[in-house]
Image: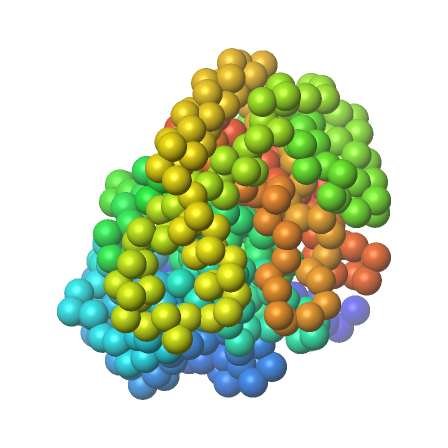
Length: 435
């Protein structure tokens, strides 16, 4: 082997993780501007096919990066380019919420998550595509592995941008399955935090009882780092040498909707984890959880419809048929008594779930029925995510499987409320065993 082939070539800057970017920038081995240029070059190469971006101004991104280089200021994500779902306000970029009603809308301030990311040294690349008001009517984004397939929704652009090496980090949101499901379809790590932990000031509310931010990255470590930034706390590396976790294999009440090939992948993975040293047991949720998807739908639709009263009253003709005949029709037909009953049922389920976690560190579950479906008119089935969203628990998609067509399928790990750090450690262990 000659001297040229013996040395392993370093990956392009746009393919580095956020953690790696911080390391090379702070060590002076590259600059914030160079990293930003590498990401912009990738976007220029691929955006015509992926269509991940709603707003992108290369000069604006480069100006941010140059300012960081000139200042010499360092932070937890210094020089790391990131994308923001276009239902999240930005003071210097339009925020259109995926709707023609808000074409050219320019907020006066940054959402809290944007302000904290910039404060930590991140370079905001632009606004990523969202479905209409983070609901079901798709935006323009295509799956980066197959442009004939959906990337999932509603955080479609954020997931696709990270998957396609356009940015190492992106923020989405989740009210049903809007972060976790696109993570499965696009093959990236996706994290939905414990409800209430990450502040949603400046984020267009869909259903406040369920909404959270959602994070995308290409490693568990980057997810943990970004979470600390958005909590505005000092970075804390994940502990090394985490022991094999106690895992409950939970097929969930929606298991019958999972394609046989995906069922087999999950069942085989559970066996692999057990052989690797984890204590793995089957977990069947009590019968009351069979109503969880219905309760989620009543809560989300009731709240969504009231939140969008102004748009309904003044711009009904600019709302998509999918929204008018789906979420809004359901919400307008929901009585306050039905809504209150659904909220009470959700809280009962949360109380029943809590003691189950006394026996397990995480539950291991399906994310999606299978690979991203062909077609761009629908973002896919969210039934396997809505339960955990309703439970207010932290969840993560792990990009560990390939389906029959060679496309990504994820596995979902779920932890007890407020056990997000335990989720990260267990998720890293699971990922290492399955890849």
